[in-house]
Length: 380
Image 1 (cartoon, rainbow, N blue to C red):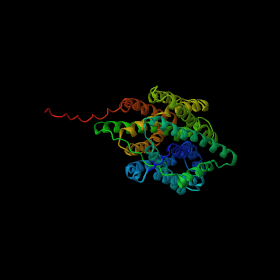
Image 2: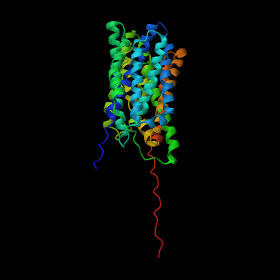
Image 3: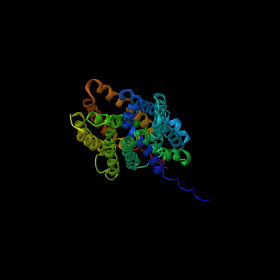
Image 4: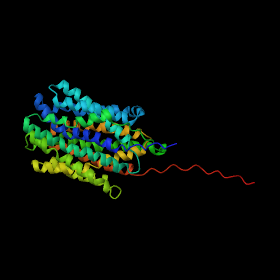
């Protein structure tokens, strides 16, 4: 009887899928500027796009354990199909209704990828592996604002750059091989509640800080004096920092407190965002913030996935990401109305201070379950 062939590593498939998602997130801020211009509406009225994305992540994450019964691979393929359709619609949306349909598809598809990716990846090196696949996402996100800005200058329709990842993501939807959801040993209930609550909140805080820069970075550049096309291109500074951090971080995992150092750097980079600096200062601040924030989500997600029973960590992480995507950009936008966008960016500082306050809870390893008492034979 021959042994079954070993299943292929899910990292490549997950990396390609997350690269498409990263391309979307990297170009979302620039796309909002151009969509608002094309539809002749104030850019603040398009905050529903990030809100739709966050709401979809919460809904998909809440249903995560049930969805993953079908297998992480099937969820990944279905999510890829939705994401590809959303890309295509947003690229050519002629009116607000089509944009809303695109936002729903992008939200559901992106949420499915965020759920299925970590659910398919486990092991003692999970933080480093999640950092690598998220590095692919960050590298792809660098290309989005650059291509959007280039097409805007060349043909006056930068949103068409959103069509670039569609072939790859639809190829995964059509041909991706199934990936079995791995099963890991359960962790004792003694540690689940505390680590789940703290881990969930840490992901909310990390993703909230990230989305503030992703959604409002291009607008901050525009307010510093750049035109719409230039701001869309210069917004690549943040995903460039994210990509650099995630490419370098796996080599240092376990050798330095990556999350602490990253949060401190991101807080320092937030201060120039709130200062009356010109475009060059904002671009440098975006790059430094991306470098610092890059490690926060992979590290916190790996801890949460390891702390909970199989599938539940990935599902709870998706809910956390959706909560942040739903709340943080909207809150920053609400603060920007009375205070101005520059001062509103200081919201990032208390988010990361709270993350540092909770970091020691999630960074503590759970004690292994006590072994059962050994039975001894009674004396004769």
